[in-house]
Image (cartoon, rainbow, N blue to C red; front, side, top):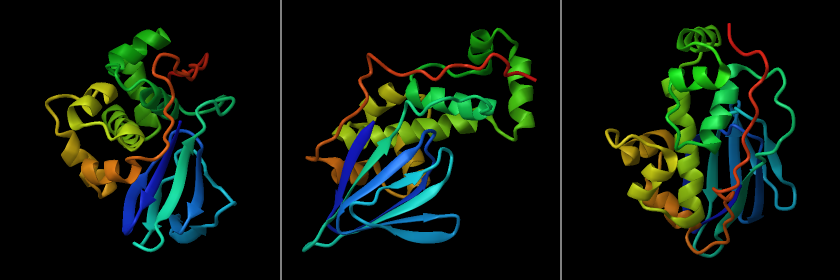
Length: 210
């Protein structure tokens, strides 16, 4: 899954939390990434790879004379998930298939366990199902709106966002930019999204539940 961004003025994106390896490639201007309290310039020709579940902030330091351009590519088929925690595996599934109702009962049915086992395992990992689903649906919304500037109603449908909750407000609170502002970063650029009819689905492990 790959999208391209272009900014003719400084733009900040906060709290990106990829569930898969994220490759950031700068093509023009200055792209900065902050992680673990340190800031780094992404040099054109030298892509930066962000490990799964490593939170970052990004800045496209563009101007009218020289816009900042970069691409974001999620490596969905990133090899074995052996040893990965349950909440990380669920996060990957939610990002890839956000339209499903990711309840404890739904996950338990997939794992041939019980909802109580799912909740107990997540609790032991310090994770909450509602929060991880929300985070990865927002990450999917980010890539979707960059790919084709989809409207709010269409994004809610694609990401399985509850009609009772305000996607636009949640998106702004999380990333620090509105859906409209992010859509303008990707509008008119070449953008490639993973086909929704042939989606890679990470496998569940044989033993997951506590």
